[in-house]
Length: 222
Image (cartoon, rainbow, N blue to C red; front, side, top):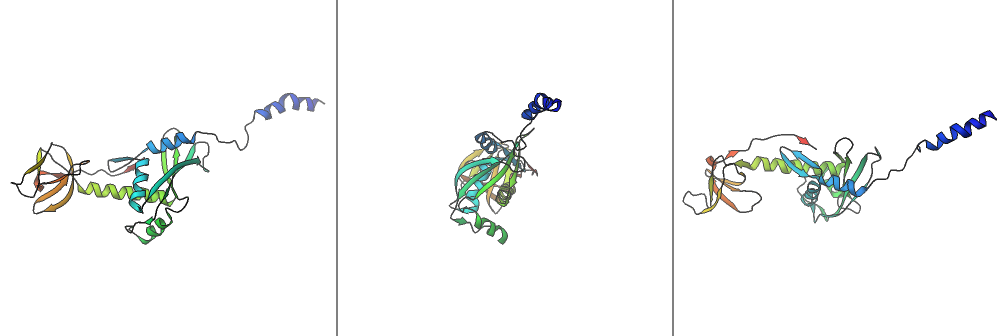
């Protein structure tokens, strides 16, 4: 009788207060999708949001790539603090520019029904994003390759210069560039470079000696 009273008055209420061994995870997935899209990835001083990085990958790696939707679910690894955020897309097939056969085979699986680029997103203590699966790792590789290509073509003008319509000091002036402006080299010819100033698309010529290579910074942080 005494044991029964102890169970009713002490142990039973305590058991009710104990958490379930498999608590359901209820979070606003829309907020995690938005957080992932806004999170930034940095490589060699170039910063892009994961939304931009993912969309660019779909366009660069696939023919007729089209983002269909974003979706999210609790991560099976840390369901209470981590979310798997997926960009579901469709495509006609991979572009022929895959650098290695293994990558071409991987991209051939992309764009099929339900295919997506998935990221592990966590904001516990600090925002953390990591690739989940081969497509996300491929997206990071494409982003790095794109940045490498830009950095290798980046120059700056230490002083104010003018762009001309042809590689000739007497050619008409196309535009005036302020000191410190960053330019992208499109072509080199006989001591001249054909450049453009992002985000503008117009290009012009100036002497190679009038520009300097932009100092490179390495590292991927997110």
